[in-house]
Amino acid sequence: MEDIRRHRNVKLMTDQKKLVKYTSKPSFDHFQIFNQHLVGIENKKVNILLNKPIYVGQAILDILKALMYEFHYKNNEAHVWRRYSIAFYGYSLCYEIMTDDVYKDMEIIKDHFDFSGYPQTHYLFSNKYKKMPGKFKDELDGVPIKEFVGLRPKMYSLIYDDGNTEQEKKTAKGIKKCAVKKQLKHANYKECLFQNVSTMNSMKLIKSQNHELFVNHIVKKGLSNFDEKRFWINHIKSYAYGHFKI
Image (cartoon, rainbow, N blue to C red):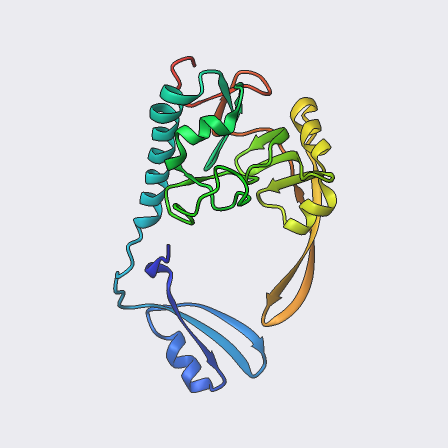
C-alpha cells in the first residue's frame, strides 16, 4: 500500500539562485549532481494529507490467514480428508492426500474453489466463482502433481505430466525468473532439501544511476532449506512457532 509519508518533492535545477533557495529550506533533505549544469534537489513535504488507508495491507494478510485456517480446520479436516499431510504452507496450501479419488472429495467442498481453469470437459469445471476473491485455485488446473519439493515460502518445485512430456514448475523468491528457468532444476531443490546444498545464482539487471543506464551483474544466494520462521525438528519436519509440541 502506498505510504504518503514517503512522498518527496524533487526538482531539477539549472539556476544557481533557485538552487540556493531550495537548499536553504528547512525541508531540504538530499541533492544529486548529474552534471555541471544539472542538479536534483529533494525536499520533504511540509504538509501531508493522509488519505490512503495504510492499514489495508496488514488487514488483507490477516483476513487471508483467517480464511486459510478456516478452510483447513473447519472444512477440510472435519468433512473431507482423513488421511493427509501438509507438504507446504505459506500463502497457499499443498497437501499430500491419501484417498481413492481426490476430485470426488473436492466436489464435496466445491464452493471453496474456483474451477474456471479446469478443462471444460472436466466434471468439476465451473465459471461460478471465476476470479472471485476468497476462493482457492488448483495450481495445475486438474493435472496431478507427481513430485513436490518445498524449501521455504515461495521457494518450491514440482513435477507434473502434461500428457506428452514431464514438466517442471519452479519458483524461487529473490531470484529472477530467467535465472530460475536457466540455472535451476528440480534436482537442485531435492539436493538442497536432503543434502543441505545451497546454490549461488547469477543474474544481470538493468539499472539506472544519475539517469545513466548500465547492466549490473550480481551473484546471490539462491536455494536454501533454512526457514527462520519455523521451528525445525529435523531437516524436513517443522512446526510453527507457538505449536503445543515445541
